[in-house]
Amino acid sequence: MKVISEKCKKCLACTEVCPVKAISEKDGKIVIDKDICLGCGCCASSCPNDAIEFE
Image (cartoon, rainbow, N blue to C red; front, side):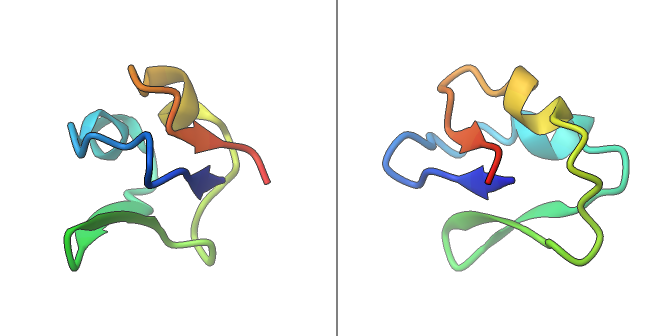
């Protein structure tokens, strides 16, 4: 999963739905910890700004 920072409004909807809590805010940006991300797509489907996509 990858965050498209130009589209991200930092609403944090993705952080609320991630089943393994792989998404957080760091230095003013939303980041996905790829070591624990399951690639399930819950974050992408919950993003109202289409700011998360599969890599």
